Amino acid sequence: MKIDESLLRKLLDAPRDDTVLLLVEGRAQVVEQSALDSDQWHGAAVLLSRAELVERLGTSSPTGEDVARLAASLQDAVDKLGA
Image (cartoon, rainbow, N blue to C red; front, side, top):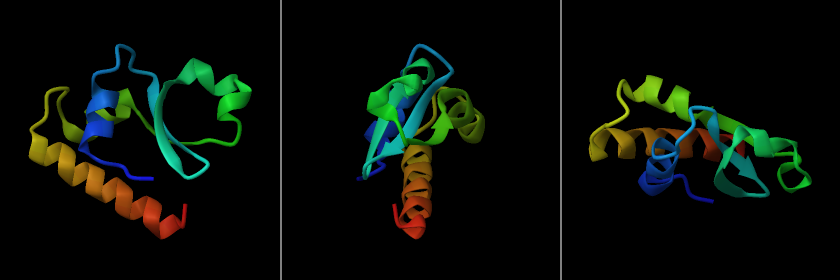
């Protein structure tokens, strides 16, 4: 599982602020929060929502460098959890 700039861009491009980045079975996915009630996402851990991502970046149109830096930080945190 790799959290990279393209995954965060996918989250930023989501039409709804409650779309989330989650971890499930060793992989990262972007899904609408309403889908979390389905069996497909049972046991998933939510990392952050689109709204939280925009808040962390300070804009909905961040530079590639800012997105890459945050992706690396999130990947590091997940690696330390052993996920």
